[in-house]
Length: 140
Image 1 (cartoon, helix red, strand yellow):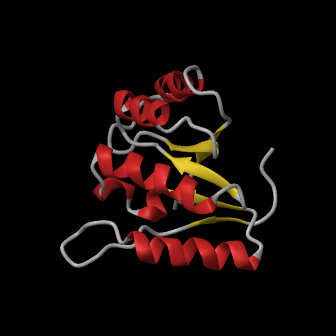
Image 2: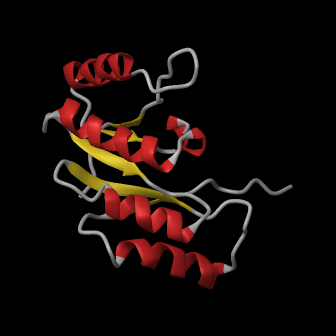
C-alpha cells in the first residue's frame, strides 16, 4: 500500500503569513526530480496547526494539481478535534490524494477507546487508506 521514500514536507510561507505556493511548487518539483515516491502535505511537519481549515484544504488541493500524478500525495488531515479531522478529510478525499495521515488527538488525551473512535470516524467516511502518525513516549 505505502512504499518507497515518502517525505513529510514543510508548508512555505510568505511574509505576512500566507502560503508561498511558488516555493511549494519548487519543493514539489525537487522531490519529483529526485524520484521521491510520495509526499505528506499538511501534516504536523507542514505547520498544520497554524493553518485555517480553508487554507489547509486549499494547500492539499493545490498540491494535488502541482504533483499531477507524478508521486503519491498523503494528506495530513489530523487534529485534536474529531469533527475538524472528519470535515477536512472529507473535503480533501479527491482524486490525486493517495491516503490520509492522522495524529492522535493532542492535548485531549483520550483513552484508547476514544482514540479508536476518533480514527474510525475518519476511516468510515473517506475512500482512501488512513495512516496513523505515532510519537513514541519516552519514559524514564
